Image (cartoon, rainbow, N blue to C red):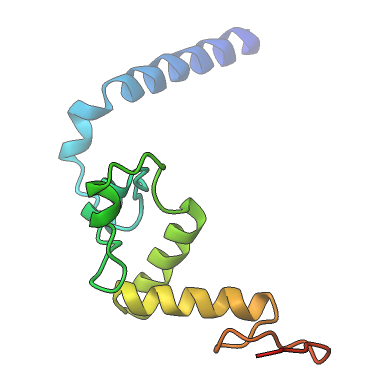
Length: 126
């Protein structure tokens, strides 16, 4: 008897969950949930979408890539998400977030902020 009731409740829940999932576009608009805009952000995959999402500036101009018909997929996905995270957490613009991201990558690879290696054995002939 218990198995029958448990099976019936489980099956009913499965049917209800499936129906809610399939019709979510109709009923989610009535929810009063206000998610922050950064909760779910689909990262663009072309230079045009990168420009539209604000990942360009006068110093880092992607419009030349679009005008030249560049067939690459766009900016690096990990780099874009890291730059977005810096922009959101520190409240800075794209250029500053890109600079901070680059300095973080330099520090991770034992390179100074000026671009020179920090290796004590480094010899430079300039």
